[in-house]
Length: 175
Image 1: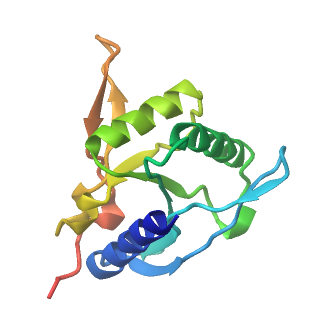
Image 2: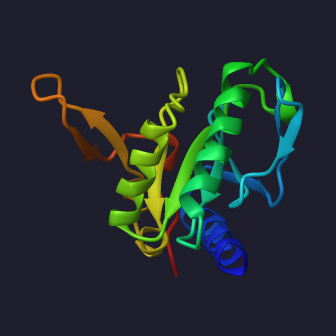
């Protein structure tokens, strides 16, 4: 629990220091899985970005390789799936669906996390899940820290790609 909280804080601090569009954060946002009537929290908090009247909320789910982590993560992904499937504007204070970022320990771990998402079939419609790692948050260019998985149409195999997210471009000068 402590390591997850520290990693979540590290992510928030990275966005605070490096992203020009940074507007604020919520340490313990509450999400709601309506059908199951369950309130739950992203373990890494929420970061709010605003630039030119465009607002994007990032929510971070930090995962650690503790005993039983896969089962716990897959259960949490089912809650996220329900939250996104039943989302309506103003749900849990969001104007539109927040961007989910899953933060793993390293690249091998985010591959395992992606496989868990596929195994539980937690496909989030109209929401592209981004992945990151603890060490990536320490990089100077935060717009290069997120990864998405794309499927090659000819082979059916997945590969990792860095998405273009305009609000992350134009980093703050780090002193």
